[in-house]
Length: 371
Ligand code: FAD
Ligand code: UDP
Image 1 (cartoon, rainbow, N blue to C red):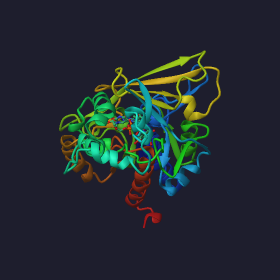
Image 2 (image 1 turned 60 degrees about the horizontal axis):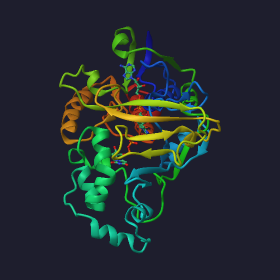
Image 3 (image 1 turned 180 degrees about the horizontal axis):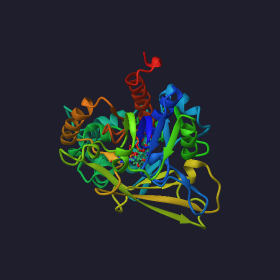
Image 4 (image 1 turned 30 degrees about the horizontal axis):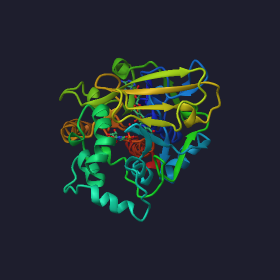
């Protein structure tokens, strides 16, 4: 098989690179070892006609107008602002922690003028802030840390927050108002017909061929490409020559409840201290679908299985850097995406990284538009 560019992986990173290169005249072959496009953002109807995300709930949010406009070429949107409650001390309270969270847990009547005083009283200043424990304790103190973060993080990562980079818990802000949205980005929406329909449109170009059930490591010898864009796990590309780069996995327990129209009040409920799963998501909130039943998913973190999360901590970053030095030497291969760059990217960040990588590949191919 001869092609200008072989793209390994049909998730956000691979699909956007493929589209950008094809739109500049390159001949692109996209392969994925799974039997569908979309990577971890793939969605589909379950056996009962409810749109689910087999690899866990995916909510699109970005502050980048450029990225939102880019994807808007391939999908219409349904406005959706995600809300999450956490089950703590027998109550369901908002996370990120806001004024109502504190008032309900401690029986207080704080408002915007007094909440910061409360945080200042309970917080334990830490300097420097290196770990996820530091971030949270520095902002809200031990009690809220133990209620919301320690148990959840230990389950999710198999590590104590003190063993994880500060960036992990820093994803969750502390609010001094009553905003109970999980994200505050300018653009928050779900693809109207789902992610998979959006991916089909991104990949629908005369310069793109897609081969599913195709593992790069089995067919790399059969493809004659001028350039390879690889979006799988970085260590696998190098046959784990420096040892395994750890990725966290999950087991998803999907359930359909035929006689329950609404299972929970919001899209996701987090369980920091109860159960072995971290959270339950009810998909109808995300998609706005009407149905007499409902479908939910529970997420059970695990070490083995498909790679879903890079694990941000110093020793992993050092190992990543060793692989990355090999990657930087490659003249004909570009590594992009959450798994290949070992970065805890959200979907919009993958689009941004893919647009940047496309420019670089066009340059390598000597394309005039990349000047
Ligand atoms: P992936 O989607 O992982 O795609 C890589 C593809 O490469 C896969 O399809 C894989 O099969 C293929 N591949 C790997 N190796 C090979 C090989 N050897 N041969 C052929 N194919 C191969 N982001 C958000 O913005 N909002 C959210 O709400 C959100 N929720 C998430 C929830 C969960 C549970 C998870 C795990 C992630 C979530 N994300 C969310 C992050 C989002 O999934 C990623 O940012 C994005 O999907 C990554 O895209 P990617 O193309 O880099 O990687
Ligand atoms: N987190 C937590 N308790 C919560 C929510 C989040 O301890 O109720 C921590 C946990 O370490 C988690 C991280 O913050 O992995 C990031 O949370 P996010 O919801 O962004 O995780 P994702 O959706 O990427 O799995």
